[in-house]
Image (cartoon, rainbow, N blue to C red; front, side):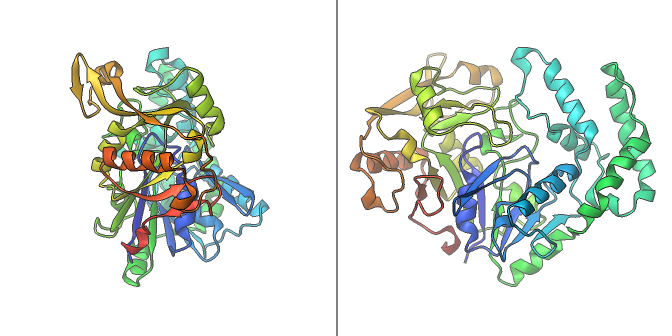
Length: 431
């Protein structure tokens, strides 16, 4: 049995929540290894909709242990709120099914405020499209060695020096925005309000996970956002503030790089993006609008409409390589039902030259033009299909052509938000 890493192979919002929930039936442990509560995962189980943004998707399944790894930045107030919302829907959240890494950094109110100040004061072309939830500034403090971490909540009396160091940086920034300085007591009070709620889940999770791995437990590593938003390998600077590629499953959980044996990438049958940044295949016409409406393309966390376009095989082929993806979970095929023809981007044209990759330069990314291949569409429905035999021949041809272009096989095919509407080609846990 293999341990599995699940990553988005596009710009996020690929339907990871459903796939992780589908896989979690065979998993014993589900680990979030990066990001914050800017990630939105929607699960539909027995007609009940669960919207998660910080908690691992496995939390709604009885008998599964959910772990928030050290690579995640944790907003303690949001954590308490999200746990409360699940309890209202009958989901029990206790130390038996949730653990949080003691060395995970915390998101504070000063991070949220700074995030919003920067985004709202940026010129239109410089806006990143951040959710303004403080994720970026929290990661900055982590790297700057001034973060307050979960373990620090266990002894509030020792926080004074850490808060002083944190505020030396943030108050200097606030003065630049002509804002009043934050007093240390404000931070202490903010942390004291939630310390008891958070600490009950704190653990030395790197050690716990290693023990579980050695005991033969199946571990599912769940990423947030998508590989194209990776701080190193994404469309910089229009990216998130953490490493979203599969390799960070090791760093963000504390397990070694050999802990996972299979990397499953999630990709929609088309492409979407939220916020600013390059999008070579974006459709601003009626087709793009139709795809967005059929796919209900609105952010789980923000409610913002997503930009939509045809499937970009260049980008997914690139993320297959940067994340070491073994197989793809192909989602939302049903959204393409009824189109007479479907286009797939197979290459780019940059300054007259044909290239098969997305250049790293921001200026070059803005200039690339998609080169499309046209594929026949289908009039029959694929929604709810649970076997290859249920799919129109043209839909099967489309999937097979995508496999060729991205140089990776389709392991699962999702044909609706419902968990059961999934065609299994290869079980990642049985690698």
